[in-house]
Image: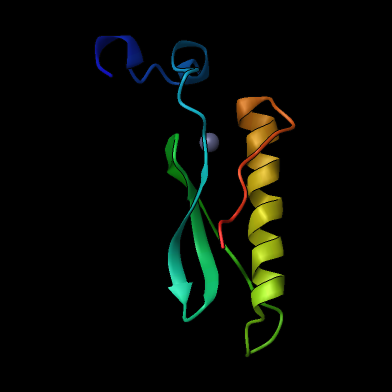
Length: 86
Ligand SMILES: [Zn+2]
């Protein structure tokens, strides 16, 4: 960590490949993950928008996972991504 990992906007992925981006849940609603961030992109975060007043764990997890997959593919250019850990 250090000089080689400068935050060169848009080029971070080319200079900092060794650190694999992972999904990190930052906010929980009881047992339900509602907000996530990417361990490699502190500026990126995603909040689940439950379709009902009583958020469903499955639904939120899927929304978050999908958003992260999308982020991972577009930003990190890979099909492989982290999973929400149980
Ligand atoms: Zn990222």
